[in-house]
Length: 299
Image 1: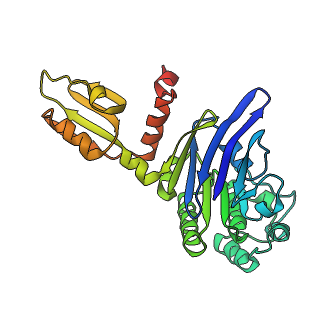
Image 2 (image 1 turned 90 degrees about the horizontal axis):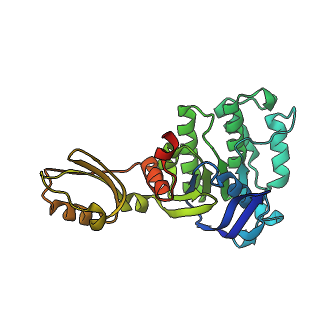
Image 3 (image 1 turned 90 degrees about the vertical axis):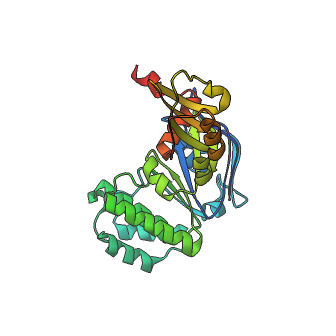
């Protein structure tokens, strides 16, 4: 388990993370979403012990992360732009990480390089962006740690490779209870793989919930009411988003789906439908509540 307690981080006069508290349970995939500048990468670097919090503390399995080699043996951090030594080969990086991760699986590393078509003796600086990302993920998997931290994991990978990586992650979770923490802007990718979602905005946490529960709590309702009917939907429901075009009403509502439909049916609608929300739609709805409105960006 990862415990983040009242953590803050400033860069000059910019407060990137503000008094943030969050708990990440073991043995699941935690997706870290956020608006631009929300503090995702900063928070992930603090969890990985790369940055020191100005305030607060971060614990992994009860161990304080900052400046603690024992805590850092528990995870592998894959940054958006993974570091490789100049002129290093994949074989050189294997030797490097083997010094810091006693459980590094060299045989598996060799096998995965072959499967991914990466030459062990080729200089990494000649790899493409996608190949470098693949190598980073292979190194992280072969370190055999219980936690893997990924910043924009699928960036630069083609669709086939993304699906292959997801399958490997799923197998790792099943076989050795791997915990994944993934920060990404790609909501479609996270929707496929995540168990739990943390939504960051302006350095704080808007919400942290199980993805299934989150989808069950928000619903998109479309209805057409009889002529002359104009109820106050905001009094009937907790409306997050509301649009009306002629007689067609479209709204995003928080609450129990069956209760919402029952109340709407009492209005004797001509047409009524409840539609599932994608993670992207949930993201937009929740951030609009927090004042991050797309309409303000395009007008």
